[in-house]
Length: 232
Image 1 (cartoon, one colour):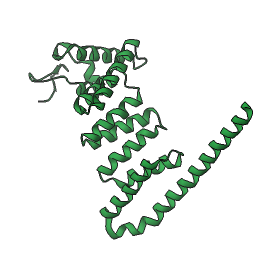
Image 2 (cartoon, helix red, strand yellow):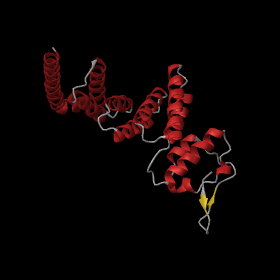
Image 3 (tube, helix red, strand yellow):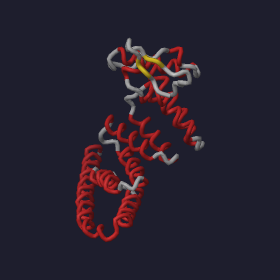
């Protein structure tokens, strides 16, 4: 069932319309502002969340209240606990509650992306990682998780770019190297002989990234030595 607008520009919700956390988070802001709270038939938390979000929108997205921040933190912790017990749908639901209360916290999007990854909802995982990176453009964990999702979607060029970015920034690890190898193997399998045409170019990109990573690592060691000398 869809939401209609009559001749008087009044929203008409179908009788079976149900407000969900996902709908609150993703719906158009102008539509949300016209939502009638009696339609929110679910538990009190949804009514509180939507009331807070409407207030946030009416304020021109200027600030998030202390109550919203507390609720967001609490819901995120609940989501984390469900993740630990592998109760993934519940984790996703509570991360969504958290995001509704505070849509400016990148770590919550990143955490939910992992839940989406584990449930096989890879495109949703990509969207959450991208949102996290929009909020914090050097968020290495979000680049890593986005690469994982891209590999499962067989978008190997995009996975490669995310992993090379991590290496370039001096944050490589055994896990990053493993997924880089997995990306190249999947890419080669997917494209066959055509892969030979780009293999050297890809290896050049990797080598450049590793050289840059080495310089960053040496610079960090140099700064640490200087600091230790000053502290003596």
